[in-house]
Image (cartoon, rainbow, N blue to C red):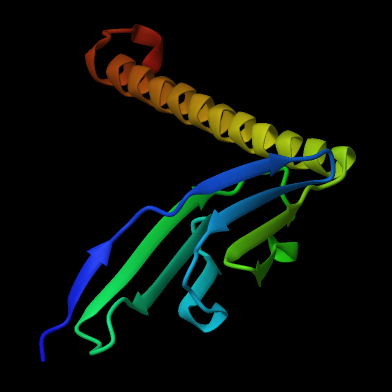
Length: 144
């Protein structure tokens, strides 16, 4: 028995609020057990599902959606609820102070990387100039 798959894009709607964002995904005909909501290691929210679409089990409907989770979201507090054919994914936002701390930490990290690269370039340039002067300059005070 060969199974055929029909991929589809479910209707999605965002509801933005001051304390949370909610993603509504309309999945008529699905059961909760046929759905998966995961947070990937790269910080993306991955939502997928699969179900039989005919009585003999040879044909299946499936979908997969991936969404980038913003820095302002508390990723470890994301919740999913399935009710009346709609999957609600509730994503609480960090407090403004916590979100600002994350942004400051990210910009400080970028600044530190940039500073380290500038120091490496400066030291490498100084070493190269020193090697050149020692090798090619005929300075009497260097004591060749």
